[in-house]
Image (cartoon, rainbow, N blue to C red; front, side, top):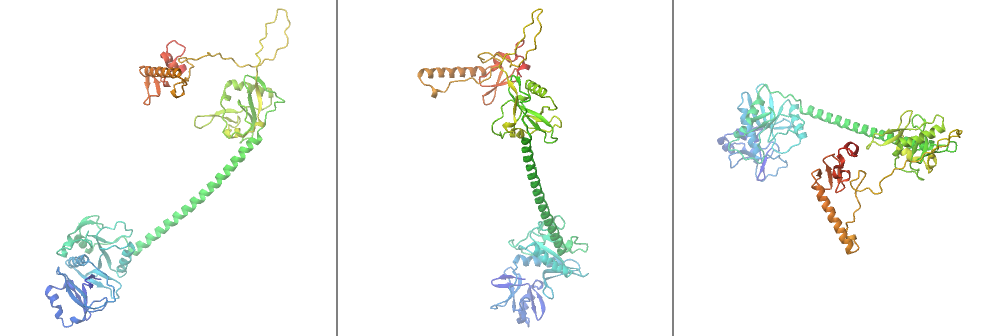
Amino acid sequence: MGVVVGGSSLQLVAYINGERVDATEMAHRPWRDLVKHPRYAELVLIECGLRAKRVTSHMGRQYFAHYPSLECPVVHKSESPQHLAMKQALKDRINAAPGWTAEVEAAHPERAWTADVLATNTDGRRLAFEVQLSQQTEEEFVRRSQRYVDDRIGPVWVVPKDFDWFRVQLPMIVTGFGKASDLPGNPAELMELLDHQPLIGKMARSGAIVDAVLQPRFKWPHGTPRHQWDTIQRLEAERAEAAEAARVKAAQEAKARQLVGQEEVERKVERDSLFAVQAVAPDVGAVPAVRAGMNVWASIVSCSGSGHPFLIWRLLEPPARIDLRPYRPGPESLDRVLVPVEAWLQAAGGSLVRGKLVTVNRPGKPLGFACPTCNDLVQGRWVSSIPNSKWSAIAERSQAEVDVPKPPEPGARPGPPREQTFRPKTVHRPARIEEGHPEFIGPRPRTLWMSEARDATEIAARQAAKDARAARLREISENPRYIGSANGFRIQCSDCGGTFEDDNEGIHANAKCLARGGSNPAGSWR
């Protein structure tokens, strides 16, 4: 390996007649006198075998390069001056350790590898220090490391920064020294660089980690690079296979749920249609409608679970078309409605019973019909699907007054009892409920839009109405009993906690909502 300067590939090692010549081991005088060697003309670079010459840089560094005007067919790997300086520093540090010798550009006999610095101990241990200042993939780190392991050599990488993203654990010495770093005056200064060292998990100098790796007690517990790499690949393959199996299983489960959902939908559609098909109109020919203060329509349906028949009813006449909105009982739940329903069932006799009214567990807690035997809920959409032809009137409104029998005259024989009919109770309300009355509910109609006025008189009247309303609003807002909201449209009464909008005081006017001894105590209004 070498660095190309001025078109030449600079090397640290050359050969004369097969004898290794290391530029890093030669002092200045022997290096200068190398040109006087009798076989200097036979000096060659080992990688290409072409003639070489010695070169001294402007900083006094010693290299070998191709002889001028030679065309080399070999592409020599380039090395930066920083790379060569780090190799010099490693070699000097290793040679200073007892029992160790270092050799730069040490090559395998068959050129399977060439170590930047090969450290050899007297006990036979060998370590290959590789300086890697440029980018390299994790796979390449593993491949090059395994070549040394196969020859029972421990690889040690000298790098600028910690590759903490590596999955394979390799011995690394972090220096912070890269290809763009300034060259030191003395390569030994590179052993004083301080950085976080992954081998010990804390800050330390580069030279101290080199010394620690050279110690006999240093062991590498993570296994060979190939073993780690194969384990990682196997685990990743297993995870990918498990993920794919999970994906396939999830897709199958989703498809199964979809099928189940479709079957459930089909069952629901079938059950919905069956409910309407099984519904029967009450036979009003055999049991005529009872007289009452209201009209009541009914249908005989069957429980979707047990099949028990029971009666459901409604106060509004069933529409001619099917109503898609779910039907919910409203006024049908009042006690006065149940009187004619029970009266018709009693007249019909037999075992037919009316459905139960239950609270549905939905927002607003609406009412619904349920089977009186098994409490199965009747869906509102089922009731809506019953056609008009399957409803019959079981109670009809009576317009006649209820006959009140006169007391019999003394000695008169009592006649047959007269048929009594129901008539609705007449409720007398005031012809006009003014503001302040307990039953007043706003808002009152106002004619305040000026653009709708038709003449000057109406404009003046509407302006006066607007002024009066503004004065009324000021009066309400200044009333200490009232608390205005942030937007000013809603008012709260501090006496009873009730609210009203704008000037619609209603029962709050003149403190009637809580008037002691009056007809509007707080409990009754709230």
